[in-house]
Image 1: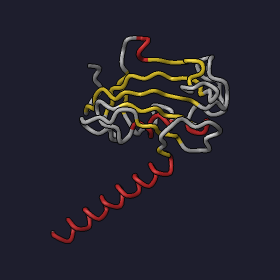
Image 2: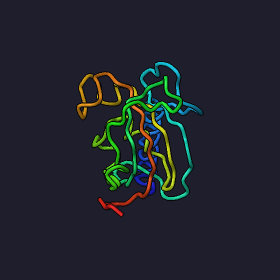
Image 3: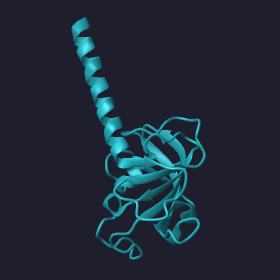
Length: 159
């Protein structure tokens, strides 16, 4: 019995390590917006560090966000806005870690805590790739998302 428990704990530790490693391969934390091409990782710039529950895969997150085409010539990096939960006046509730958002947004939200904000600069390979999105995002665009984590819940819920 003890041996089975130890094997299960080791398996869980390996899965957690593999998840953290995959996460670190997808993200690069920075202090400021990039001024040139960003490569293949999502750049994460912490705004406010939250103090609530942590966003983890398989849980629903409730977020307010604004999405822009990244323009490094602008001081705030904001090019054309293409999507915004704030403009609609309704937060988004979405299951995290299962591919229901662009990869860079999905990975970039993981690890946030409720009350936190992040700026995510997402390369094309982790965004919309070579397709046109919303009729306003050209193919192979780098994206910029301003995200606020409002809640983490076990099932879909808009507060």
